[in-house]
Amino acid sequence: MRSLEEIDVAVADAVQSVVLAFQASPFGFLYESDLHALLFSELRARLPHTFSVPRSNASEPPYELRLVYSEYRRIDLVCLDPFRAQAVLQEHHKGWDTYIYALPIHIGIELKYRKMGDIFDFAACRADLEKLKGLRASGGVTHTLALAFLQDTRYTEDFLSLAGLSWRESTIDHVSNLNAIYVFTPKDMFRYEEA
Image (cartoon, rainbow, N blue to C red; front, top):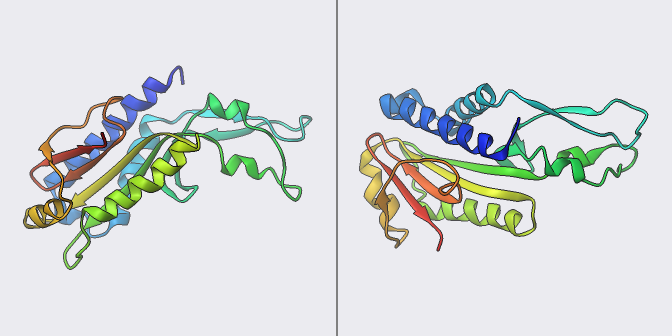
């Protein structure tokens, strides 16, 4: 891995791939976990790299960690920051190197899926973004991305109008749009960015 920008591009490409698969067959995804699994797989395929993190016992070989993890620090998907991870204090806790479970995150991603029978709206995405922003404020996460998928286009107006926000159709790209909420329907994409 040469740069964080490569991670940004890989994440945008992986999300775009999942969106295209979703839009081609929304009912091919019956549960949020289906989208979660596909995005995890796409991210790992694009970011297969590992990086070393020293152990607290310097005489032992370092940990070889992946860039992409699922449910890391209670975030659906993350891309770790391999560069900032090198500066983490290597303190063990009760004899364990638990610091590897709290490394700096370059991109934190939360997913929501409104399927048949669900009634949640944009507020759930907003809560996810607020959780990620809290970690960003403490320096734990650099970029925050909330992704909502709506199984049926009939949910769109209800989902977005309750947010009381101005939405615009959009496409996902990299870097400048990583701190946003995206809503994907079988036909459209919408983006909301915090001011």
